[in-house]
Image (tube, rainbow, N blue to C red):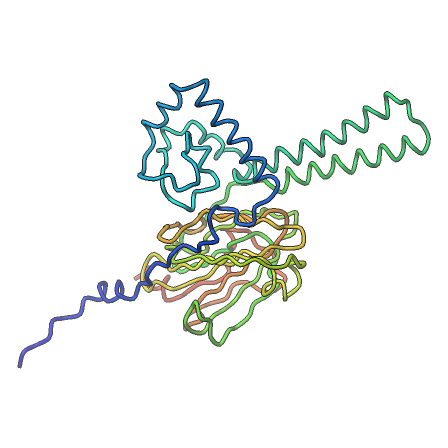
Amino acid sequence: MEQSAPVDASAQSENCRRPLERMDPQLTSIQPGGGVIVKLEMAWGRWRRFWLTTFRPKYVSRMRSLRKGEHAGCPFEPIDPRDIKYYQNQGGYFWEPDDDAFTWRDRLPFARTGLAELLVLTALFFGGSAGIVTIARVADWTGLPAVVASVVSLALFVCGLLIVWFFRDPPRRIPQEKGLVVAPADGKIVAIEELEYDSDIDGPAILIGIFLSIFNVHINRMPMAARVIGLSYRRGKFLNALRPESARENEQLAVRAEQLEAPYRPMVVRQITGAIARRIVCWLKPGDELTVGEQFGMIKLGSRTELIIPREHGLQMLTKIGESVTAGVSVLARYECDSDSDSK
């Protein structure tokens, strides 16, 4: 009798990997909801490109020679790396880090995708605070007008400090042990639900909901080393993110991914807006590969993040409702079979 060839386990696992989905056509930029600050940045970009092409043609020529890629990926020809900030999820032209004179912005202790909001809003609040104090002194206000001016000035100054605090990007020590599922966001655990079936997971699942207040860091991180399979964006309401119905009715963006290594578990990270937070940022595209704890986006000014992972034998939940968690650091769950196989 003829014996069948042995089955290659690794090849069999590779066959189980999910095909990449097409990019959601609504995701034409990394901030699909738009916004006033985005429009200001776009207007500044148009002026900057005009100025550079008119008065610095040698710079433009040099940056073109250093540019990599085969197409723009955005609705205009980018002159330097600043032009592709909002189009990172479209692919196309790029510059190597050594040729990018603006990588220093990534080393700032603030979220790079929030730098424009940080500058504009702090200028408004701090400037308004200083302006009211100046007017009160020049007009020589006394009594009730002086008290009101002092209170308003202090309130604006505190709001400016809150904006600085909100857009901070502190360093994180990411645990590297196999089988761990780390928090995709800072905040408080407000939901842990067992789902009998989830279509993205294609089986039983666990849903973990995290509420982010305005005092939390709002940068999202990947809960496991993973490859992005697809993304989907949905417009919606802006209900308070503490309300359970916000997960169903609010504007949101879902990132579907699978582990980089076997058994290639699927996962979903869902960014959901809130009553104050109305701008989702995600610079991923299908095919991107991320390490555990790597940044992939943020939600600006208070929100909710949900994580859905497979519910299977060997899954140990290590968090509970009401617990405060830190993105990329706090361990929400562990797949014991993964850590056991790594130790053998």
